[in-house]
Structures are given as structure tokens and as C-alpha cells.
Amino acid sequence: MSVGFHYYETTQQSLTLQWVDKKESAHFLGKALAMKSFASLLAFGGIWLLMDWFDVSYKTTYLLAGGIGFLVTVLLYFGFPTYEQPHVQTKKIVLKKNYALYYVLTFLSGARRQIFMVFAGFMMVEKFGYSVGEISLLFGINYIFNLLFASKIGQWVGKIGERKALTFEYVGLIFVFVGYALVETAELAAALYVIDHMFFALAIAIKTYFQKIADQKDIAATASVSFTINHIAAVIIPVLLGMVWLYSSTLVFMIGAGFAVCSLVASQLIPLVPTESKPFRFSNKVSTD
Image (cartoon, rainbow, N blue to C red; front, side, top):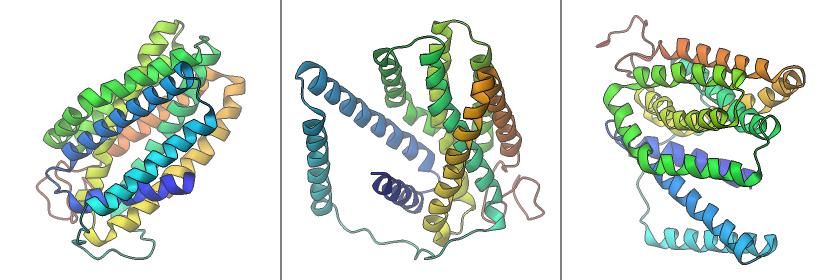
């Protein structure tokens, strides 16, 4: 499952950045995120109905999900044309100095995601006693928010630019992580959890920043590199902070706030108008910034 998921996500990300016009990509990525949330809600609701209302077994549920997925894949294969690649992609791993800021932002984004995925949810259960149903309800709220607003957020990112969008996200995350560290009520913790998830939509700006600075033939190869960088954080952060958690959960979230501060600093290096010849704000190359 993991191999399939990562193959799909890498391909989907690289093709999106290749095919969608740079002026429209932020809005498009927002709409795509809204569609994913809609699909998640459908799957979420379907599983709930099957398992809670109709007492369907795990085996049957998975067979249904896999069968529907296979059928949809066949329909897509025959229902859509083969698209021509606008640029022949590099067939080897690409690491370039011009993409250094993108690598840093990707790593920090992966670290932030792990703190949300692993420790924020764990805090809700361990500290405040949230049940499976209550956590599921929070997931549902997050999906509904993305369904309603992700497209508008993408449009907003395209309008104000990547630096301003990421600045807004990381300033907000600093307050969210400090809030996690200090929160003492279940209701406020739930509010922080939902707000935290809302900021994920702004990560669109990292992808559109890369699209604007990239050599078009490097997009597919760099998509795979970015997944590797993201997963370095995914492997290291839960282990190290898991040991810190045994000592102090507050310290884990203060470290998360530190990651947000690092992300904020890094985001200030993005030019107002990123281009392939101007990937960094203070580079010596000519730019409109």
C-alpha cells in the first residue's frame, strides 16, 4: 500500500506542476485538495455506514474499497486520452543549489506534519481522553473545511504570492504549537487541532514556489527527491520526539514552535516573484524583487 501511495503521489505532484499553468497552479492545487477532502468524506462516511450500521466485516470492507478502486482505474484508463509531455523529464536523481530553499522548506514541512499527525492526536487522547468517535469527528470537521475553503485558499495564495502566504502560515503555527504546549482544556485543544489542520492548505505555496524556480525537465525527478526529504523527517522526528515526550509533552510542542520559527525564517528568502533565474530573495541575479 505504501509503495502504491508514494508512486501515485509523486506522479500526481510532478504531472500537476508540469501540466498546469504557473498562474493557475495555486488555485488548481486548492481545488484538488478540496476534491481529496470530498473523497475522504465519502470514504469516511461509507466505512462508518458499512461497519457501524450494517456490521460489515473488515475483509468485506477492504474488498469493496479495492474493487471500487480497481474499477475506477480501468474507467480512467479508457476514458481519458494519453497526454503529451510538454518537456522530456530527467531520468536520474536531481540535486541542485537553486532548489536548496525548496529542500529546506520541504524538510521543515515534513517535521511539522509529523508533530501534527503523531503528537497532536496523541495529546488529544492521552491528556484529554478523546474517544475514537470524537477524534473521527475532528477529522470530519477538517475535511469539511478543506472542501469548502481549500479552493479559495489556493486562489488567495496565487494572488498574494508564496512568501506572504507562508509567512501567514508559519506565524500562525508558532501560536498553535505554543498553544498545544500550554493548553489545559479539551475544547481549546480541539480548536487548536482544527486550526492546525487548516494551515496545511497553505503548503500549496511550497509547491508553486518550486514550479516557478524549476527547470521544467527537473520536475518529476525533484518530486521524488522532495518525498525522500519529507520522509527523512517522518522517520527521525517521531523517534526523537517520542523519547522527549516521555520526559515532557510540553517540550515536544515547544520544539514544534521552534520548527515553525525556522520555517518562518526560511520563507523570508523567497522572492516576491520567484523565477528560475531568481530562486532566492537576496541572490545577485536580476529580478523584479
